[in-house]
Image (cartoon, one colour):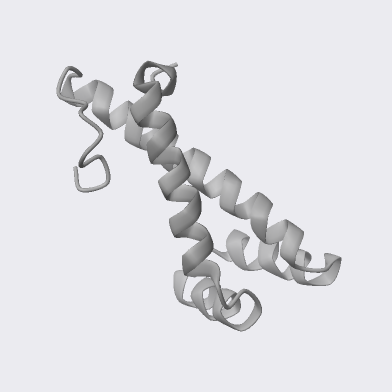
Length: 95
């Protein structure tokens, strides 16, 4: 609900809001991953994918800190863009 604050999604059911959140998170992961791919070389990207596949959040945080120092800023920028897209067309996040 904090993620959706200010998006005026009161007209949607809880199930619909959950679907919007799920799609928003998926889009966030995809877009941030795409952005990371543009900031690292092929070897680093292979390392990034390997760390993701391991599923170790702490190791991933360490890798990102070492290789993408402005990672938090990137995530925030992408999230703000996505929130604008949801606000403009919330129905589009239900499909």
